[in-house]
Length: 164
Image 1 (tube, rainbow, N blue to C red):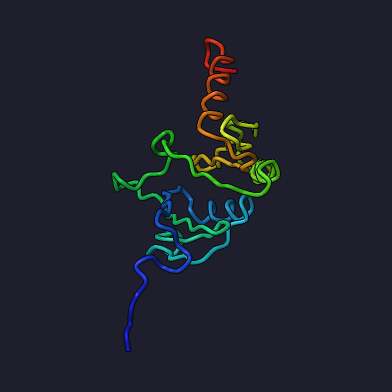
Image 2: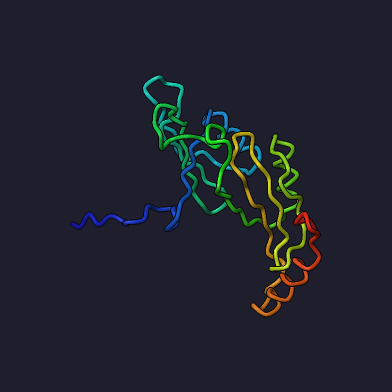
């Protein structure tokens, strides 16, 4: 009998975000409320309160997260770092409904949903823990030429402050 193990665990994709969050248990509840996340597993730390490792499923994708460890230089949340350079992107059936759901759960607006030149209806929120989420519904299949023309028009409409 062969005990062949799948090198990519069931339910995971090749790339899986792993976020460091201050108050990860609280953040997990926010993600459930805001994005419909389902808790798959949670391993608490030795204190029984902190989250050493957790997995959530949002749509067909997995998200890993843990509490920050302030004593570790490589395990800090966006709140400790004063920002993030990463946006977690979610494609959904109705971006406007998810955007409102996220706001109702406590997210703040970074960019309200708009019809983007690349064919998506796209908006962006920041969660209460400092992570940014791009929310999108794909509306049009466009050629690279159409996207390029749309980008030119978009950037031409921007004022000197970088705002359309």
